[in-house]
Length: 425
Image: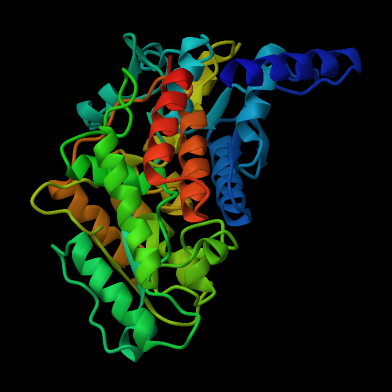
């Protein structure tokens, strides 16, 4: 539960104080140089993201003499708990990366600076889409900004599809088309290779499914879908497993992300975010293709989603310098010549060209999907209520119970709705 996580964070913060642990952060550097400011910036990511971000931050420091950025980065596991611990110890970073599902949780605890105020301190929102700004506005406060946009996409191992004599589905394909193609690939390739990764544990995939059925996954009020819609989704994947079209539970559990089984050539297709194309292609010898998610007609379910957010801590002692850093990371073309689209396509249209000028053919495939969703995708949802992160984990947990036949679909759906509503209450 969120409350337990907060209590753990508070205890961890108290322990840190007790043993005298001090982190650089919101206070000026004590180096004898008057006017010198240190900002702590926290983010998660891969080694390649760290390298790109550090290079961009070096440029920021060159452009802003007197401001030093202390870099606090690592992997995603434990990242949010670390931020909560720091907040409980009154030691939050000045600027930090967040993701949409926890945005309202942080805002409800008063941990986010109103970026409307930052527009008077060096942050420009010129050219930004008002709809995007609205999705990050909570109780009248602009709590964060989009640090990259992406969308859901489907990828295919073209060699395995060719081996089975199956064509890559064209735009406008349906979920039934996926079932037919995946079964044909499973039957037409070597034993142990499946047509598609079982995606029943992915709340992001279900989110698309719900949108296509005129519902929502999560809203600012709670759950936005009917039990029947989730039952249909989990039944679809149960049928896919039963036919041999999708990976069985024992195999799916070996590959924690939706594209790991594709990299291992255990599955011929699956789901990724469109900006991940290059990273996946670099890990597999076979060529991969990308398409819109199935079922996008007559009602689209994919949308331009916030890959991650950037926020200023409410306790920062340097709001003006923090605003300058956020403005640089979101609006400076020179920054995006370095950052590219590692975090997704920039939300500010003015720097998209700078971010994409040198993209390779593989990345361009992902951008094509993003452009299509930009043109006719679904509207992005508002940030969900606190507890959404726990709900997402619960979704995967109960879907796996169904995968291994430890729960019926009906019981799993009922349990999910009951427990999710408790988390969101």
